[in-house]
Image (tube, rainbow, N blue to C red; front, side, top):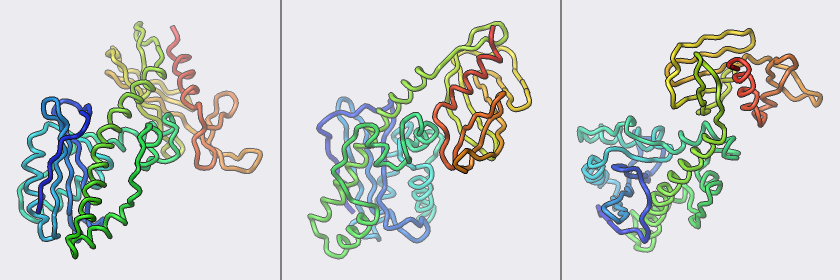
Length: 305
């Protein structure tokens, strides 16, 4: 195995005590495939450091897992992309296989994909693929290596120990962790801008409260809007009004809209909300832009002074 450390040309902003990591594997199965490269990015004083643990052979997997956990344990939290679904379960299964007595917790982690997904429409995303999110955030990626290409390159490197292949594999992983660190900062900034611009005030229990929309989604025939507030909502609120309901307690408020199925003039399937006149909120598979304004109007009417 080999450990490669380098200082980045620029310092990247990260939350205090956090690191970024990304793994390269020989496939998608955490039972039968191997972790062959782990990159971790972190700040030390005024420098951003990238450390990469490379298994020159698959048989070196246990070693890179050991040295990675020794470094990761120095940090309070970690940042990944799709790490809650892939990287962390994969690593934990491999730690279990080798009886290394270590497990990476999600509790202290930030998965950038999970930050983005609830706000994909507000961010103007057609999908939540990494390259599309990077493009939307203004991050240019010269690297055109796919996950499949990465696996094939490692297979060839393992056979030949070719230095040029090794450099490509390391650079691909290095770009992943550097871009992810930058992406996290840009996403957090953009989400805070959206949060502030979409906030509005209601009056509850005699107090003016500013609401920030955290999430919206459709489950079955119900449209959910989830809000938070910086102020405490003094009284638990439960309102049921036929086609919608509101529940609020502490610093959280949830609005539920009951939807019904219909079709528009072109025959497209529509989920609509009946607010005196039917309002389409989803046509075929796409949520109609501006549904958050419908929710805002309802809440302002319910909680008007």
